[in-house]
Image 1 (cartoon, rainbow, N blue to C red):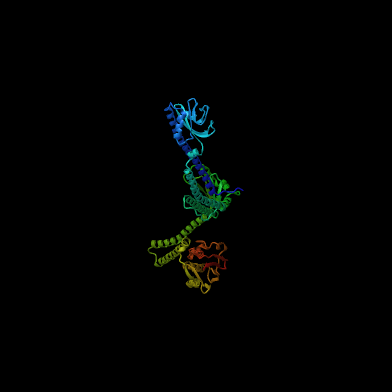
Image 2: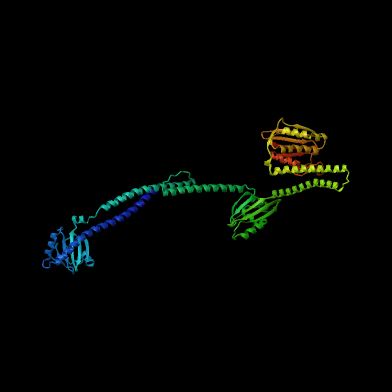
Length: 580
């Protein structure tokens, strides 16, 4: 198995070998320069000898050459120097190191260079003597004057280079080695930590470990990388959370929702989208992208075909209403700037029904208000139109006007109570109320009317029934039930208010009478606003048609439930609960 070399070591050895190569090249270059400098220094001395020899030979024409050379050698410190004089044809005129005739010297290296450059030097083995020499040749008037020293320890010592630069280069290598090892170690540690960090986030997709980086540029960059990762991870987690919220919102939305790409591929849809689509479709729908092909959504399909491929500067939308299977659906398509689009299907049957009921309620309110207003207006017009009307007749008409105005006031009060419960239920004050005392007070207030119709009343209540609620609404519950029984149940009956059970949260009541009762066809609608079992009789008795609706809403306000049961001739029972 291949062993992974740490980055710090690879960095150290890579840089070190590069530096070592550079230093080696520099060393070789400097060494060669030092060598050449030493050779040139010796060559300069020997060339000086060459010119001195030329001067002496040319200025002592009467003396033999060997005599001149011997005199010269006696005067210089280098006694073993070899002197050679060569004519333009390469013939050796004089050489103090050999006897007899010598070969032509024009093929010698230093001779050839000297004839071209007027001077040269070389280190080689002599073909004549077999000794290694340092030669220095000078071309003077086409004659070659050559001096040479044997390449012995003395000459080598002269040519030896200065070792100071070697020591300097060695010291620089040691210093560089120390600095490089220090910084490569720090860089390697930082990179190793970054590698560990990368491995951790790769393996576990999360990294909460604290990393300590050096206080330098690379450390700062590493810290920024880790910080950016954590920020990105946090943003990713937040985005995932928000996306999950959005998906959950769509899944549990009360609307059918689907989102598509610009080429009609489904991105996201919820369950209601398919359910609503199947309620609209005549055939079963299995996929979200099949919905757009429904004949009922032809306008949506045409809208998408018209807008597909066009450049848009704003979000476009198309809305249609589909009435199918007894339900009403609102279908809305929204196309975005990039061509993707979403379709929502909303069941607005309930809203439509509520709108219908509101229109009906408005009509009922107008009708109920119209009756007493018309009566008051009619009576007053009669009085105004007949100034001679007898006083007792006027008094009768005024009393009728007052009765109708009283009924009108009650109607407006009941409407006001219902509106407050529908729109501003939180504005009702909540206090601690004793229901036993409240019901007893209502019974006492109604005794005169009950006595007139020979109605008995039985209360089966606990000594104290405390409830946290609104006094006005609780009063309305029991007062309306009492008034309803007194007005419509008949004479010689018994009204019973029974708190038949209580637990930690609720009181359970049964408000009943044994009067005429209500037909089954009416019992499920008696809590509707303005609904009357006997319209003519109710108006004659002054009812507004809102009493039981107020009772139901007040019970619901106190977190309870109410229902009614009745049989003709056997009375009516109102069963309800009130939260403590």
